[in-house]
Image (tube, rainbow over all chains, first blue to last red; front, side, top):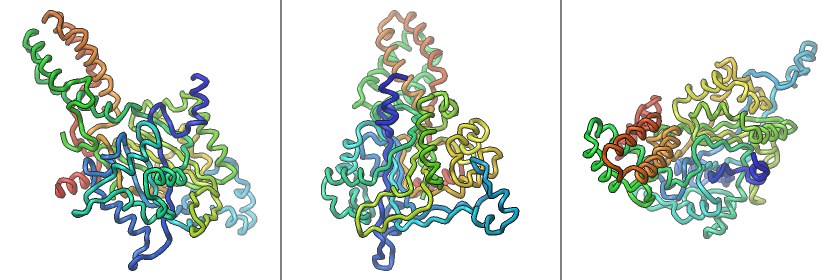
Amino acid sequence: MGFMDTLNIFLKPNSSGNATALTVLCPIINRVVDGRSSADIVRERCLRLPIHEKSPLAKVPNTYLARIFILDNVFYESLPGSDSIFNFSEITSIFSDKSRIGALPQKDQLKSKYLVFSSNFHGDLDAYLRGMWDKWSYDDNGQQRDVRYIWENCVAFGGVTDSSSFISYMKRCQLNSALFFNGSTDDSLQEQLKALYLKQEFSKFAAAHQGESAADLQQAFKVFIEQVQPSNLSGPSWEPGQSKP
Amino acid sequence: MSNIAGKAYAMNVITPIPWYKAWLNWVIFKAALLVPNVLNGLLTLSLIHYARWVIIPKGKFPHLDASQPKEELKYSYMLFFSNFNGSWDQYVDSFTFAIPSGLDLFWKMNVRYPKSVPLTPFHNYIQHNQIDTSHYYNAYPMAASNDVKSAKNVKKALIDFNSASANKDPDEFLKDYHNLLNQLQHDFGEMRPTPIVSLAAQAVKERYSAEH
């Protein structure tokens, strides 16, 4: 591992090559609107988002995989478990009920609920967030929605009016990765989708042209290459979120 | 609500960690990145597209405005996000059976972590601390992580082959073509929205088909 690679582990904690991890916790306004909490409104809007190729994230350039959920609260660790280091309460609690009860995990409560957005994408963070602001779009029962429809119940989002303020807002809510593991590639989404398309089509070609004469196969291969255009990323390919062959 | 998008499953886990151990956990994560062999087990499993751990120190939940109450927590928190292929059980089991020590290394500082072996307490721990996803997007729902990696090999090999062999004499072309198939035999395979590995995935498919 080179010096720069080592340095980047600390300087670029959200990067693995050209792949980037974005983790954002946006506090939701603690209020009730028409008998419903803001958190429930946000949750319902997220649940109604269309999926696969109709998801608004299919329009945000270079999104590999992304998710949204509401963090309502943290969990109390009531299950038995082991300790990383010997726990002296194991001895003291033999002699004292207070000691035994004192060794129980403490209870935490969040004072706000949070909209959690986690994305894995290719490239630069600012460009990605600009893409979210500009391109996020979906049909919600006949109404076109943009990114504000999901985020507008978050604290301080009222000040977001353009892509620059959206980028600033998301960065205020951003958390760095302690470890970002890339088990896939860090190519652009366009490259990944083109490669998947070629794998699909060439697998079909190979199966369909077994046993052919050399001349026939060569001719068929040339036609195949003209159709699939392997080096042309703008040519035939899979679409983002494509869920059917 | 769905944790599933095609062949990928979204797992979200939040666990408390004593604030005085959270920094040590951070150091362990950075050390794992500096010593690549530590992550070899995860790479060999090849179930995962992308995964990450995030540590939120005690006072560092985002606080944007005076109108928002400041969190007063006793613990720091660790978030785990994973995008993997296969079912929940296959994934969690794979950690227990394939890389238990690696898992323990990353989670051992967390409150009441039961260790990854035996299986049942570890299953219970993950289930107890898991949060369901409201919306999950996958740019290639028909593809597993191995498909994305093998597709890259196919693309390169196809372009190289076309450049080098497409215009040779037919017999030479055929010889090179057979070599190409041999080279790519582990990378081939048509991708479809199957197999369905869980009832939940089947339910998502049926709901989507009904709506479209």
